[in-house]
Figure 1 (tube, one colour):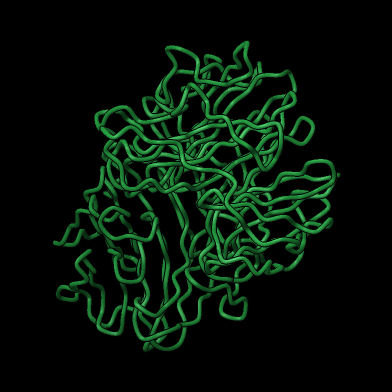
Figure 2: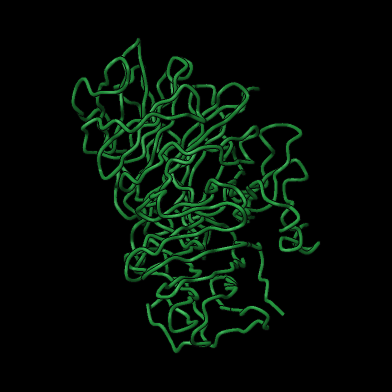
Length: 510
């Protein structure tokens, strides 16, 4: 299942490019019967956890090494999401596991950046958001909760710090208030890794969800563990249903299920978001799933019997239907960079211009290894991406499938012509020496990748080289990242891109 995010585009430009077969449309329209299937956000959206504001839902998720960061998404039904804002407009270091919350009508995002807890705040989830405030805590995975006017942050390792009344400074340093649930010895896991706390006050109890087992590693590693207390700092009573969510087998579709946060609908139904890797497709990163939960008579919650992460599940909002697939296509007609894009380790607005049908990117660095790429996360087992590129003398540019600066594969235009970079960083013989303009295309067919190019006025050519990318994932390379289409420019001068196009299927040019 590939969930579709709709961006505002020039329909006349892309109507033909985005045409898909009737068979594909039928396969993608899985929500038409009043049910949905996971993921609700395909591709890498780790640590995503929603809040409800009236009849609306908002969430943010880890942006890791990309900027703008802390993208804010909006939904009316918990299933179909669209990006509406970004809370961070600069690069502040790697951003993990943010916590969006509301307190007394004001909104906060507590988040780790470069290993320290920060906070931004706003009057509305769409902003404008404040500049980050460093709370001076060296930790990750914050979660905010209040009790009787006192405000607290729960943190990785079962620690908790008290905040000042405005929530923008630390009143007392972190101390341990929660101990890990004893994971059964037979469980194949990465580590105990007590992390990812999410806290909820409900019916006289504070409920704490934590992640244990490690977010990577074996398929059965991650899990959601729950506890409750009459007070925000404990003592905590462990749920008899632990682990509340867990991947049972390496043969399941969704692996390393964990990092769960509860959310309710206006009519009283309850759900939990979790992230997971898809079996056989770890390079897509940790995708966002939604699971129903039920409350027991004695005040615990659990997964309904017979429901799994791969079930067809009734839509949370009656009358809504799940939409189809992601579409990051961009005709670069607007003067602002679209919210689907993020730069690696940079957000320098002086480096690029966009609008009137083109994106111009100044060269940075000597190679892809030190040139911040512009990327967009996508979902789906197979897809095609294409872009027109025009480079100035001395500039190297191209279209990549990008994990990080050291691990990427794609097709390039440089002063020597057109060439392919393979995942092992080798670059083979150049073709069409002296070419400075071309349309470049990458076809990702279930992690086997082909490369195509077309010079102005000429026919498509397929390169001799192809690639295989199934090993480009966190378990092999580290970093908790994903493979995503990317544009870059290094060397001298600049590159100009036009008509970035995406198809959610193999689309071989003829």
